[in-house]
Image 1 (cartoon, rainbow, N blue to C red):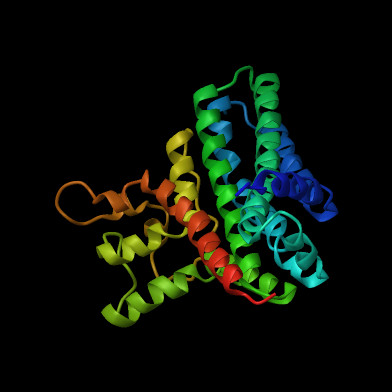
Image 2 (cartoon, rainbow, N blue to C red):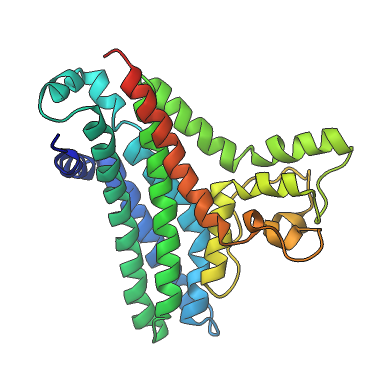
Amino acid sequence: MTSHIGTVARKEFDDAGRSKLLWALIGLLVGIVVIGYAAIWYTADDVTAAEMLSFLGFPLQTIVPIAALIAGYMAVVGERRSGSIKLLLGLPPNRTDVVFGKLLGRMAVVAAAVVLAFLVALVLSAVLFGGVPIVDWLGFAAVTLLFGVAFAGLAVGVSAAVATRGKSMALVVGIYMLLVALWELVTAGPYYLVYGEGPPVEAETWYLLLEQFNPMSAYTTLASETVEGTVPPFTFQYGLESFEASQLTPAERYAGAGDAPFFLQDWFGVVVLLCWLVVPVAIGYYRFQKTDL
């Protein structure tokens, strides 16, 4: 059977690329890069081009997931809402082509936005700071690209799993709020109830593994490994664990003898981001295949 995933992906890239809201977010992302570089260059005399990259970590982890979620949350459910899904499936593309074609198309849009932002950063680094830390730049760009497509996969998976725009929006907004605003409550809160105190710096392995699976933390851990300086995670803090603990990676907080287990190592953040890409898509694909349209 001939696959039409590429055809659907090209159409999705064109359709998503015409979204005014998405282009506004892309403009905001590029604008933040420009403003950040100009502001640091103007106000600080001792910042290097390599150190400048770490300053981009905070705005990137804020804007990239939002742009990716907006790019993907209507990918499949939008076709169902308009009724065009029946027409689309009446043509050569089947349900597999639709889900994975839309996934590739929306991922390509997010990737284009991230690449554009990093190309702007490359030019500004050369012009304002007199050099380009090419190894750091490539590593940071690759991590941010994976971060963005992971959230795009999450959004497309949700879109394929539900039947209405409202449910898709509610789920992606709810998941984003969980990861950013409620993560400490749902992880450190139960820890406090079990042990009668907040998680210490050297916490139990199960808790550190749970912390490792927040894609925001996985991204900042990986980003901090690729640039000079530390990229702090953009998550709300409620005081259930110390500020010192919240700034350390799971590997740094491991209390056991010897090195931390592999699932707490910094590189495992790549696996975490891939899980946030693959698992929602798999769930959404399964539900979409079983849905009576």
